[in-house]
Length: 158
Image (cartoon, rainbow, N blue to C red; front, top):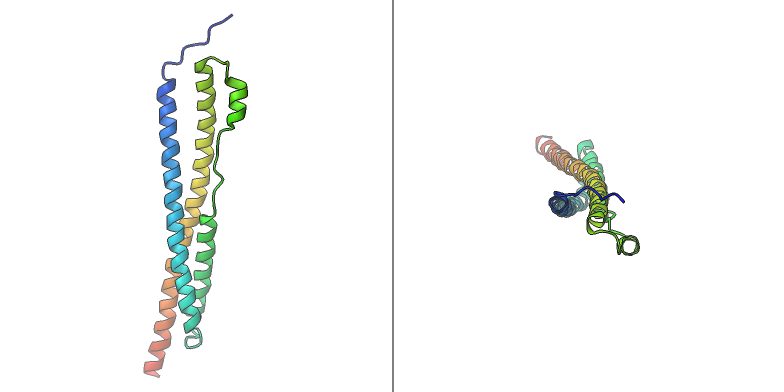
């Protein structure tokens, strides 16, 4: 019967992986907050734009409203709940209750490393959507202001 090689750094790596999971979860929550803010501002722009639509018929204004709707859609997509990865604790209990401590710790570590990898990928996608929604919000605001200025400037000069 061969003895498993000792794993002196196992507890250190387990601790680091746990820290990384917390960091990724905090980042995902931060992105959710940002997506909520963008969604709120985009909603305000669309609401204000809808009330002013009759008096402003400029193409830039209309495009701005369309981009605001796109920004809201992207923010909502980024805000959607993400899949939260969890351990299958019953299977863990069934498979590792009588296993040596290091074997169980190593299996838990491998599982958590995979969870961190998947969560990081999901957060990266969410971050891209939120970043795109912020860009659309800025473009929308610029187009709406341009449309309003063009309409009011034309009324004063014409």
